[in-house]
Image 1 (tube, one colour):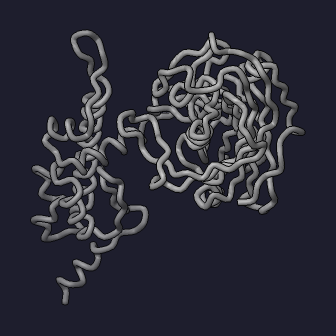
Image 2: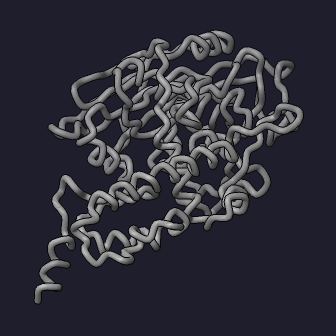
Length: 386
């Protein structure tokens, strides 16, 4: 009985003395359970650490300080491995000075560690790097204690590729708020318009649920080639990966269900055929009407990658200067797609928020070039019901 009582005294420690795995940060209050977890999660760190293997512990209570010291030691080893992994993945260059990018499998082979172990290690290493802060100005369209809506300019990404890189909208919002924001969705780099952030962590789950359940209503403005035969039309066609171009998608009847409601707001006749040039997927500039133009309001009822760009192109009216699905024009420096309006329910009150983003100058200039006018928000149709 005495031996069993002695083991029970070390079996569970106080909250303040909890054990944390140096590899995955899993927490445990039970030392025998934690020791077995280490052997499964990061056995490579336990070489020569018999005390962490729960060996030779005849008097466990007298070894508490030794356990903490051993844990500190393997934590230092884990940090050294993380730095080695970051070097192998991002920091090395070849003889010409070109950065070498290795995937997890290549790094795992070089480090002689299991793929799953290295994959988790890389995730933790990247999360530990401080997020870069930018102080470039942002255009705020709505703000309260819980949410921040900004109008993203074109040519910047919503989030950075790596935490140490700046230049994205997230980095700018970090500089504005003074703390890391919670982005709730994304826009393509060359698409402008509303991006919504959560300021309070406790509303993130509720907002993500709205986006996931497609309860958020959106409207986009798109300057498209040609004039649709109908003022109002719906594109209901599936979307799947492109077979040869990784960044592209394609329309397919057996693709993911996708639906977009389109309304023609204005049309004009301006011959730009001499200015058209090919894009990544469209080489023949005669395939589309480059002598007339339409301003469309597009309301996606689903949220597929490139949905609006692909749907209007599928109908024969690609967006001007879409570098994948349309043709290029010198007066349109990017795909002329703008997220102009968003309606969401406030995560605390449930009240609807109707947000609008002004047109950026390059979109305004393009409209003038093809002799179209857009008066916001009066020109926008009613939001379609989901």
